[in-house]
Image (cartoon, rainbow, N blue to C red):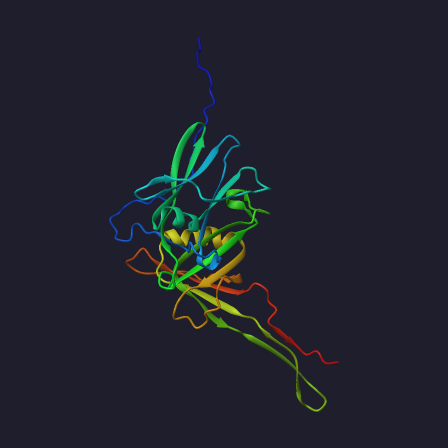
Amino acid sequence: MDFRFKEDIEIVQFPEGNEEDDRGFKDCCSDIEALADTSDTDPFKNDKWGVSEKKQTPTDIINFTIEKCGLGVLPNLGTVGVFPNDTGLVGFVYDWRQYLDVYGPGRYTTKVVFTIAGISKGVLDANFKLKAFSTNTSNYTVRIWSQFNSYYEKKDADYTDSNFESMIRFDGRFGDRKPKTVINHLIDTGKKAVKTTHRNENEYTLLSDGVGINVVRPIFDFFNLNQDLCFVSDYNKGSLDYSLKDKPVALKEVPDPAEIPHTRKTELTIIYSDRVENDNSLYNKG
């Protein structure tokens, strides 16, 4: 008599977090810089961090948590992500200004807790070092602020109409404007050059100092790939142009990064153009 029977078993597969093996290297663990100003709501002085994940099945549960070294798990302070075109996508935008005001500066850790088929597991999202904003604490840094409203095929995640946002700060510099002026002249009957159009096709370059995988991964895999609106700021005291505050830009080119030998660091170069290309002068005389 054959007593064998078939039973379907659901295989639970948790997404991977950003935990890393400790191989004894001095740069094994690093934090993302975060700044905020409790006396000023100017976005230029106040960073935010957005984290989002897609459910594998409708019954999955995803929660976002934040901890501070020495205090444990804290309440989520910020904005819940709303994704009108994707019921399986969830997210949260942490407001560092609120954490600085209530819990003070220090080291914070964000995590994602997945509950799949009744089994829960928390994975690391990122580690942060929160400080009060000043010209000194922000010196030598740049910040990318991106908003997302597109479909991300790799994760089958639709950010359309969500205005989901995130910011990332790291050591570097932004500017080096190259106007790339395009000049068009006509020669009139008197053999004189007459202007028709002059146009600046501006380019701006972001150069990082040596940054680790905690910065490289979100920039390459999320910020650059998925952004629909982008604003870049430079905070360096030694910059030529102090007006580069949340400059609206469009991604133009991402040259290959340059890894620094014998370190876990690489140098990034990102080239942007103006978000609105209206830096034109047109001959308007009839």
